[in-house]
Amino acid sequence: MSTDPRPPWTHQPGAESLETVMGRNALVRWPATPEPATLLFILSHGVGLSAEAMKPLAERLAAEYPQAAVVSVNAPRPYEGPTSGRAGYQWFSPQGLDEALRKERVAAALPDFIAVVRWLTARFAVPWQHTALFGFSQGAIMSLEAVQEEPHLAGRVVALSGRHATAPEHAPEDTTVHLLHGMTDRVVPPGPAIDAAERLVALGGDVTADILPGIGHELHPKLIAKAVEQLRTFIPKKVWRQAMAEAPVLPRQASSTELGGGTRRTACDSDEEG
Image (cartoon, one colour):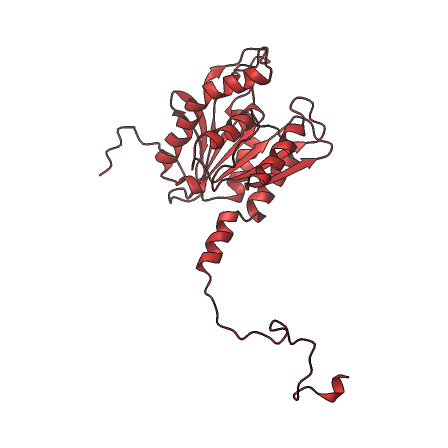
């Protein structure tokens, strides 16, 4: 019998519901089948937006991965700026932001962000290896820094139009990082993402970087399509390591070329070979 004191979330397969996650609203798109989710995708919006803003990505992920739970979470703080009449939220304040303040404010916001991820993985009983963090803009910053700060938080991070708050000093262990950006983004230019990708590769990390032309600071359908493509086709290093470790070593005889005899003729050579 479950001892979880929290009330159960009731839902229909494939439905979307509004739930409460650690005191904030979250849009949950449930797996298309009655079975428990085997994948968990956690979506974090940009500054001044809300969970609703991530719907195009959530819908695409749900269509591609019917066995996944897709959760788009509101940031914890009201947005400090105009919201066009809608309720907007922020992970950290953008007011007077510079490099030093970004690093400081992200560090202050990380414990809550990481706690939400851990809460959701426990709630859905999905292991961290099968959890992916998707973030746009400020949500991408939080997702990238979370896996730098917390080992084994998620198997993948998909950062759209975002960047690290500070240059990574290590590569997250067994976490694949996908950086996706618009080439004409003027809000968060792609330069820092490119620099971070090169740095992570040098540190032995598992990373891809895609900069798409003609796209600004937006959750563009082409960025979403590229994100799905990377999820579908990129094979993480840990999978290769596991496959190589489990592959049987087959006995074989060395060829004459490997033994250094590739240029010598023997009595078995045919004269017709020239």
